[in-house]
Length: 329
Image (cartoon, rainbow, N blue to C red):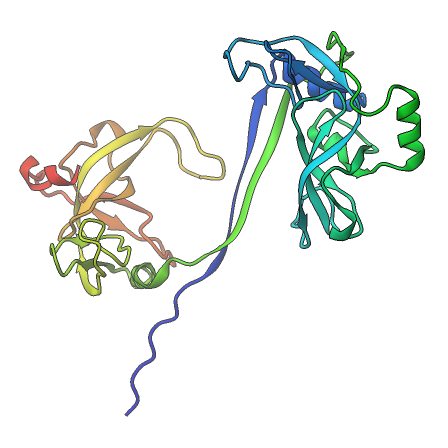
């Protein structure tokens, strides 16, 4: 007789992404528009330092600062780290160095990529220059990367006053200024719910809700986390709860979510399933949104092929007494 092998812990790729839209004040607008025009702008603080990239408020006095200055497109590497395995959407597809570069005329360093053949070609103190993107739109990506400065470029700089030249005043005025940006935030990773939540998810596929009981305080947690958050001990005793439960608190949603086919307004609630000591959340249906209330008794509604309840609806039972769920609010 052979013992059954433990269930395989679930794993799945997960992508979290959203576009972040922000408007630009006069300083950031001038900086990004300047990059589009191959001009690097910084800002002079109250104590005379030139900050690149520019900030809108003095980091020492917190006063608003607007004095824009132009700095050189070349500078000195102050520190660096080699990136031998570039990720998608990073500045370069081939291995490169992340560098902090203090541009001539600036007192702070800017972070970007340095195109170099290998880590042996990078050093603190080396001279580098901006490689501009072929197509520029008014974004930090208008700087395609930095590249080592050639001897001829260095000689030309020396003829123009040399490295470390002073920043020059700039009015920040450009035609068709950039007034807003959309930053695409994205995180790709492989998610594993772990042993406890794998069992919870597998039970949901069978239309059962399974939690775990703490061996010390005896509370039943749904969904389980594998350990008691109060006692800090492992929870291995599985307990089936529900299926009915009690609405402990709720909110009315009035803004329609993208890619979610639910008409607003609707109600999302915390629901304490019978036998559980932790409320989970779910959508309430089968009742007008303005009739949902604390203490309402509800049960899950499953759709064909659904791996979790689509929503919860009233059971028709009398409302639960407040004392029965007040500790779960």
